Amino acid sequence: MIIFESIRNNYLKFVAYSKKYRGFGIKFKQKKYSMKKFTALALLSIALLSCKKETKTVTKIDPETGKSITVEVPAENNTDSTAVAQTSTNAAAPAIYETAGVYKQTFKLEKGQTYPLKTYQKDVQTMTAPDGKSQSGTSEMTDEMSFTVNDFKDGIYDISINLVGKRNSQSANGKTVSIDTQQAEPKDEQLKMMWKVNKALVGNKLNLKMSETGKVVSITGFDPIYNKVSSAVSSGIKDAKAKTAFISSFKQSFNEKSLKDQIAKNLVLIPEKGVKIGEKWTESENATPDGKIKLVTTYELKNVGNGIAQIGVTGGIPKKSDKQTQQGITRSVSSELSQNGTITLDQNTGWVKNQNISVKTTQAETLSDGKQSQTMKSTSNSTVVVNPGK
Image 1 (cartoon, rainbow, N blue to C red):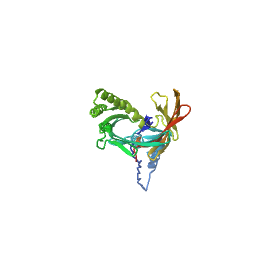
Image 2 (image 1 turned 90 degrees about the vertical axis):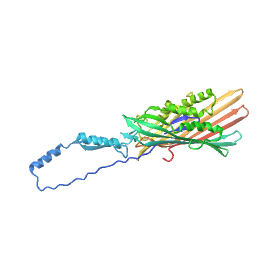
Image 3 (image 1 turned 180 degrees about the horizontal axis):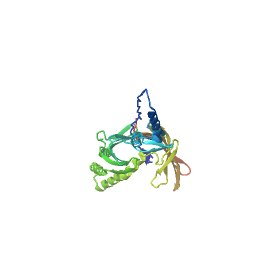
Image 4 (image 1 turned 120 degrees about the horizontal axis):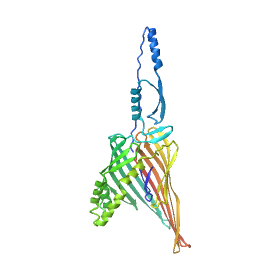
């Protein structure tokens, strides 16, 4: 499923690489022999041999469509021909495959290949004051990672997670400030700290062990990154207790458990049991720490074929309202979130090829003393794209 790290930031992060395989056919030219004479014994031998040529029915996966097909093959040379056919089938079968109309997801990643995971998010927030005047601001974020397959052994992938780059920018009132790890350190003192932390993150690698079905076995390599971040903030945070608190908070948000959850939710999108075309399934997670508000996402397998699998995304948080009165002032708050979009998977590798999700959040807050009232409104329109242009 797709992970929403913080409903307050409307933050979605997923998780793509595309590589197309083509099925191949082998044609055999058959020589034609002509003989002038056949003896009765030869004819009898040919007849007997023909009678012994039995066939059997086998099920294979069509590499072009990913669907199961049933074919008849000769039964002789069972050991050799079956082994060769099985080897070819396994090599050509796509990662997202179909059995009896049910599609399941695995991963078929190539050793030595690097699979990108670049996330771009744009948020446009508009605040409307009680007098009707409004003000807008835009924030953009780009987070780039890549996954290099080092080895595949005993059903487990050995993968390097490369932390490539991060960029953040905010625009309001005609001014724009940005932090980009691929650019020089900003002069603004307030931006330097974030730049230093991001710069300490990029250029590092983590090691991921993942099964063929997408189960994350382990992620290691955090300690060197913690040390780099600690050194990076030393110049900005002089107080020892404040520095310790900062590093502790950083570790809570960036550790094996949090990345395990994110990678598993972002990469493994089709349920383990498999789904049919047009079938829907839902995932629910807490939108608030107390779990009282849930973010429910509905997925639907739209189609599979031509090397891709498309999944539709809808859902969100239904409108919630709360009203409280203190000292004669009533405060009413209502909010809701809706989302829709499409996730495209590479059928041959199982990796996320592209994602484009739109999220709209609206909130209204009204204060009233019974005689007059004032309302403040906020609207946020977000777009999250994974692997833009892929």
